[in-house]
Amino acid sequence: MKKYPKAFLDRLNAVTAKRPRTVIQHILAHGYVTTEELKNLGYEHPPRAARDVREQGIPLETYWTHDSAGRRIGAYRFGDPRQMEDNLSKKAGRTVLSKALKKALVEKYGSKCFIYLQPMEERLLQVDHRIPYEIGGEQSEADIDCYMLLSPSANRAKSWTCEHCPNWTRKDKGFCLRCFWAHPEGYTHVAGREQRQIIITFTGDEIEDYNRLISLVGPDAAETAIKKLIEDFIR
Image (cartoon, rainbow, N blue to C red; front, side, top):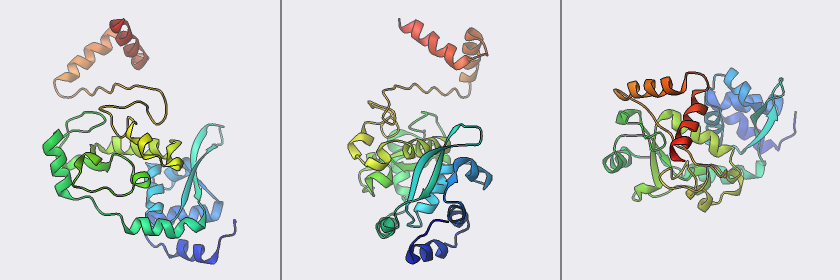
């Protein structure tokens, strides 16, 4: 087992909340935890596990490794123990986003996910920082455009993508502002990749339109076929 300063070990062992403690003790025993192992520990969304630990003020690094089949997967290990005090200070300054902020966002933009543009019940939507808190820190709720409404699945996808983006360690706020996951209404890259995305969600009566589209391209490899159909239409 890797040697850690006593103060750091004391802090790790002082965490009593079940979920972060499970992750912390696994890393203490094995040196790291992979996303595959986190799912076996009951985390369907590995970045949530990392956030649970970081919100305890524990520095955590994200890196790439390989599973038993040689596939590339994410993993987490403890960061520099000297970062612990900075993380605790940052955690102490974080506030719970208010219901008033969510109401203001819904009133301005409608009850829908900013990423998937999917109308949803207000109670299901989650408020998130456009620039991840870990990069941009806390922002005033008075400027509601620093925040976005996300469906639970979009929030999970954003968390995972951001944590595996090169900017997670660089912490360039301007880089985030130009990213799809912060400003899908106007962006120049997707987590640093020169890409553009069109996400279309079919609901209600539109599902029949979706079925017609699938019948045009065929059920096999539908996503690739739809992309080609759109490209042919544009050209």
